[in-house]
Image (cartoon, rainbow, N blue to C red):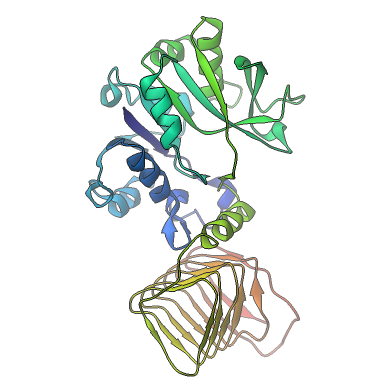
Length: 354
């Protein structure tokens, strides 16, 4: 089997954070989102991986390289514009050949991985396998209508959903999917929809198998989703002290201090992760916080937040929480003091706190 990861989207729901960067490279627990997808595929025994890239393709190439760091061989497939998931599959025809494959959206998380699901599809006779998850707002997703263990209909973002079973961003197909894509036309939003493709397979009598997953799944396309994914991943990490922590600092719970990081006269309360060459000085970092590499936090408090690389937060008088702060951001103290802050800042932003 092969793997196909789609990373060509523009990440409009995460703007302004994604104006200058790929949404799949935003870190969760100090690891780019797309790395988790690659690791899930490799864990399932899939080492031939194609990655569909768009405007941010150079950034994705630079971060992943040839895939050898993951135990994979990566082929990059340029897409001229976001034209739908099915279009991403069709332009990957030469890479995929007639092999069965996993289609994985590069900004999806699934707690328990995909190993048993891939093995069942690899050894079974199904033409397509879709992963489903029960959600409270099915009208925001592609939704499946089941009769027993048989899929009878899939529909994209229905006003009146036939069920609460959302299609998550992980699918498995055999070569019949290419003929099905040729049968569909662009949707109202101008895209070739993967739900329409799956419906063609159903209508033509192919075996489309549903798998309702347990545990948790998150599509990290929005600000709140990124913070929730960060929380869930941090809760699973093992503590590690690879940087320097002085005697005046206190570390509680599941905390990772990565190489080159320095903690001085500060309190770190886990679960939390402090990135490489980041300095935490006279500060408090609370639970569910990820601070990426080469950052400075001084005289400040942070909790339940994601701070990207090369950012500085200095002498902020009130706690920053539930915030997603981009690259090269500078937040410093100004003379006037409000009582609370909630920040969602794009890359290279500079903010003076009043």
